[in-house]
Length: 332
Length: 75
Image (cartoon, rainbow over all chains, first blue to last red; front, top):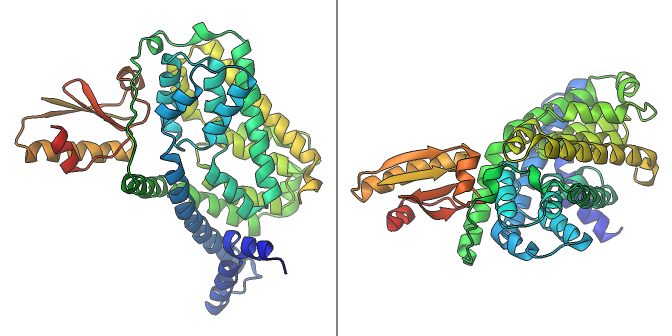
């Protein structure tokens, strides 16, 4: 047996936990193969797994992120242009702190320092869409090829989206006050103890913020997994239905949830025969295009630029959805 | 003195506000704590990661949760 496969199953997919929960459900007098037993098994296993992964991942990733505060990212990106600057911005977006609430101050800070819109938007698109924690969770719930493909297409959307926004010449479509903001720079370097404390605080803060979404997400996933008949779901969102991707995207936009909450829903839907592309489109719409972040963005950019941003990201998500539905057989 | 907490209402900002209040009391200073939640005003201080702490219109810390002791030092 190959060691990598075993490590993947036990550490990342936590097969041992699944077995343990199944045993626990049986011991409680429920048949894990029955509807109720199956729902309980899915719920307990997924909740415990997601919280364990969340804590470990956020701690590790926050430690890495503490080396890349927004001020440093801005210095790295300053003075660059061209496609490679967009690629760099998109890559840096994956390792800069998660919270979408910080994306607006970052937008203002970047623009005030004179960074072109093309680069700022590549960063802003990739930041919520592709983060390290969600990639590893994708690998845990699905598999590594899907997780890596997700990263690649997420980065492509960020690079192409940023480049198109740059080409549109909308530098004048930014709220006036943004240009007058002072540029504060800090070259303060954290000590190792401070990085560890920062990582611990991040775990605390993010777990506190996302736990309701995770519970709701897993709850919905458990219901889909065991109670909703497959033929109803495939009739609505089946892979052969052309409308499944646009519907998933439209449903995802107004939802404000964390990617951690949407993953269990995605898992259950794929199990019921919904296309991988449809599910990825849903997850991307939820994370990259949530209503609260659109409302915040409206404060700092004018309507035409906001519309262009929404149109580009929506088109990107739709293309990814259709693409992945067409090539699902490569992955599953 | 006026202490401003910059942040759009996240949990950290609330805690930072409480710590700032406690620090001012511990240092025996009369301080008014003002919460700034408006993005435009927050950004006007040049802050990129919330929460931020402003003492008498000077940005003294950003993106960090400070303990009561740390704020006392800054006062």
